[in-house]
Image (cartoon, rainbow, N blue to C red; front, top):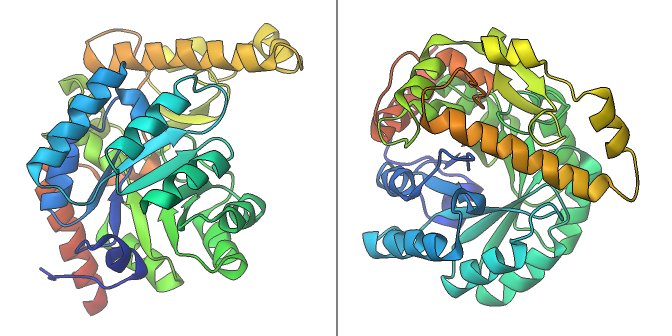
Length: 325
C-alpha cells in the first residue's frame, strides 16, 4: 500500500492520504476520529453531536490525550444553531486544528479562528458562495456535489469541481460520490486536493450507531437514496425505507406556507431542524419502525461492516490499482 499521496491537503494537514472522514450527524465521534488519524486520514465531528458543552469538552480532551494531532469540528453557521457562540469558543479553547462550516456565512468563524492559527474549510455548492468564502479568508473549500450524503448540493461532480477550480485559487476538497479508489483517483486527477468521504464509514465497527443502521448501509444501494425536506427544511439524503415512503419526502402545505413567511421563517426552520434531528437520533441508536437513516449514494460500494483502518486501506489499495488499469 502507498506510504503517502502528496496533495495540497496532505501537506496542509500533515496526513498520509488526502481524505477527510466527513462529519456525520449522530455518527462521527472521537473514537472514529482517533482511528481515522491512525489510518492516515483526518476525521471531523459535528459539534452538534454533543448535547452539552461539558460533553463536547470531554470529547476534545479525549482526542487531545490520545495523541491525535489533526482533526476537525463541523459547525452549523446559520441562525438555526443557537449554540454557535458556545461551540466556537470551545473550539478555540482547544485550538481545534480545522473547522468545517456549513449552512451559513462563515465570516464570524473565520475571523475568530485566524488569530489562533486554526484553519477553516467551508462547505459550498456553487461558485458564488465559493468566491465569497475565499474572499473572507477560508483556507479550503469543501465542494458539495449532488452525490454527497446529508445536505447534498444541486450540481454533479463533473460540473461543480471544474467550475470551482476555475473560480478559486485555494484548495478544493471534493465531497460526494467517492466510495472506491478509482473515484478518489478521478477527483484528484480532475484537480481536487482531496476528498471528503462519509457514508461508507457509517458501517464501520467503531461507528456508535445501531447494528440496524450499519446493516442498512450494507443492504441498500445508490438507487435507494432519496432527498427529503422533512428533516431540516433543506434537502437531505436518506435511505428510502418503508417509513420514509409512508410519510413522504416533501414538507406538507402548512410547513411550506410557514417557511415562506418572513417573520416566522427563522423559527419554523429551527423547529423543523429540531424535530428532524430528534427523528434521526431515535432511528440511529435504537430499533424502531421510524427508520429515517441519513446516507449518500456511495453506500453502493459498502458490502460489509469493517474497521475504519480496513476501509481506508482498501480505498488506498484500490487507488493504487487504478493506475494499472
